[in-house]
Image (cartoon, rainbow, N blue to C red; front, side, top):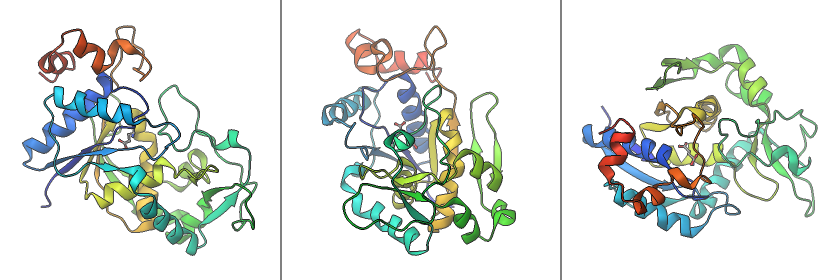
Length: 288
Ligand code: GLU
């Protein structure tokens, strides 16, 4: 049996809140219980939205929560060449095409989709089949979903690629899941791998990094569960290993609303300043 490797992978686009604390504590405690490792990865692949001040604040919050991580922190902004190599591999196999469609189509892609957030647009395929254009015209790179499914042996057999899910969330899909071609076409379609402004998409970076860090368990909120089939697809295409996915319940405020980085009331820094202790946070999250 391989060593358990858990990770916490926040994006420094705001302060951490109770939902992040829940992910981080679950992953950390699971790793420690198993005698494994807990890694920290800063998901600043979208350099247009990430801020160094939030990275420092994240370290402070995690230390305050009493969480320690193993090894060096990985920052996605340092790893562009690795993502480019994965992209080049897909492109060399004819699975990628250039898309010059408007920015509006693609603005949400480098960010993990959030519950109640923007709907992930399924691209109509206007630019499908195009090579990278000559000259400096900005373009996105998209996965050609139909070709990708063919490369995996065809839509009928893609179900041989699966992943295991565990969850504490009521209604979450526990157990074994397999890829479904019709579902991938309808929900992900020809999704973006690299944005028009050059930012590598979250989906590609996260899959490459989880493999590079030999992550065995991905612990994250249930609103990311809809991305997992896309991650499994990319793992299959790039011959990368598949972790176990633990999609946990979404932490909400007292009004039942999902927490957001812009809400100061549940940010860890605010709670800390108001005198809360790490134990208070654990108890509030039912992890005391
Ligand atoms: N960076 C993502 C976020 O902060 C989490 C990605 C993941 O855990 O896979 O929402």
